[in-house]
Image (cartoon, rainbow, N blue to C red; front, side):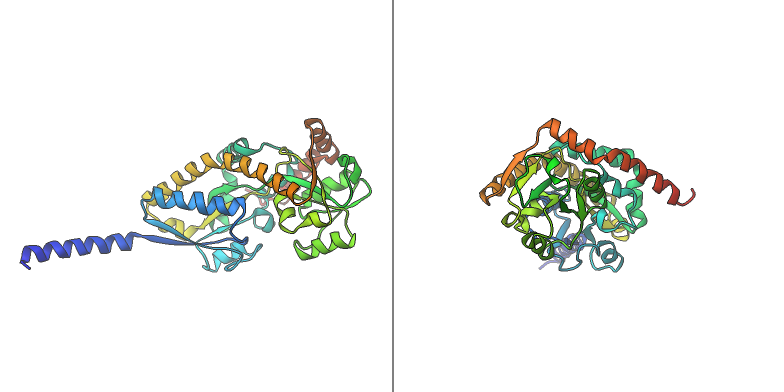
Length: 326
């Protein structure tokens, strides 16, 4: 090999080495197993768009089912450097993310692409939301969403008036107040086997929960009657966040690639939500659920009975009292 050829080979090798060094692998943690609408969207759409927009410079290494961090432990896992990215549910971090609790305070709201655009506009118009995450060591990259709320009952439900005097389980402090205002007795229990057992034993009359979660724990085996509506927007958002130090370490080019990936993913999310909502209703019926979609008038009547606006006002007043001086 001539000296010129040797120099050329060295340059090529150096270039290849530089390319290898430029590749960034980011660890991602999720408390749920891979397979539902949200996890498939994050992995199959958002993460693939990141790799594509970065031209392969950024790759995501996902870990599912709480193998790195369980639900409620997300922000601590980031602080302990166990992962670079994580889905950080606001409801699981009440003390750290007080402003984000307002999302669950809206009983009704948009669905599909309208919901996606609403969430994006909210974050654009209220920078305090992103700042709240950043104060806790992370920066939001994408705001994913879940399914609407459904009411699964052990007895046939002609209308939501039928829940008066009954005991219903829901996790959200907002929803427990909504149930109470509507005349039911709200209760809570650990999700999964404990809640399933309470349905089986007749300790509770029903569940107020996002429809996919009810299907996941086979609630239909003991609560086979359901009232549903697209308008029961589940404000249980699922932000995908990255640790602040890791975000700061990325080049501006890579940050821009992730932003483009989020934009492309948002453009697909509304259609994915609509298609999966139709599919999960079909799945519920195949499992033996007798379900009915509520009319717009029935949804409005429930919103009035739940008195959600008054509770939002009380919550806002409490936040103002406890907020630190600026």
